[in-house]
Amino acid sequence: MATSGVETLSPTKQFLLTYLMPEKCYDRFFVDINFMHVPCLKIVLSKFAGVWILLGVVLAQIPQVWTVWKAGNAEGLSLTSLLLQLYVLTEPVVYCMANNFPVSAWSERVFTLLQTLSLVFLLLRYRGDTAKGLLVVGAYCGAVLLLASSLTPPSILSGMQSSVIGAVVASKETGQSLSTLSHALASCLCCLLLAQIWYYRYRTFSVKEKEE
Image (cartoon, rainbow, N blue to C red; front, side):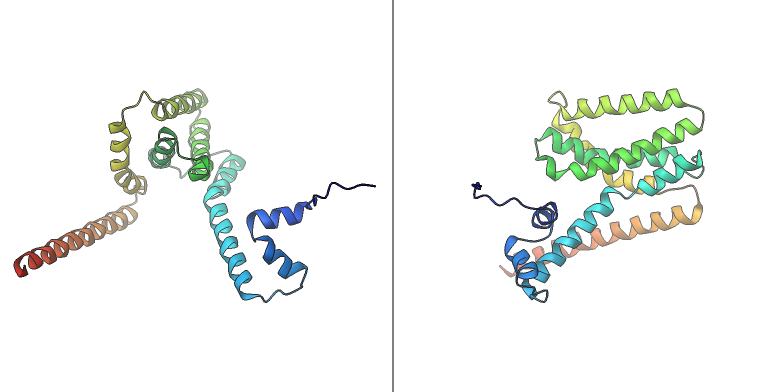
């Protein structure tokens, strides 16, 4: 029987070559049976770490969504906090969509965004406001499409970028004094560090001007 001359890759080999290693490393490991080839080990470990981190980001809130859905209540969740998290996650997505960035640059954020949106809907549903939950989801999807379209001025997207840090801090305020104090203190320390950087940068620049 004549063959086409093109090798048909097994699903396992195709997965390994696509996500974890180049073909030369596959040959080292599974043809030469040399699993101690250091350069290939570094490549595999690096790619495995990248995949693991990506999965951690993509699936971060799945356990929480599952727990809320299984328990049938959303006690302990703050609607305000979830909406602020949704805002923080939405900004980079709509920015990338509006500027025609490749899907690979922002697709993993969509999964986290959808998980947060699911929590918002479940929280409203278990509070007895299913209709309001559906309305929020529909309004949110419409807002994303509008922000990502050419109808939205670039200044609005820039404003969203500037407000993200504040939204991140605000979304961590759970109403508990100790938690709020810790996040507020962390924010103050970050501002202090930034002020020091700018101060010493300006001072160094002034000294150089005087020397010249």
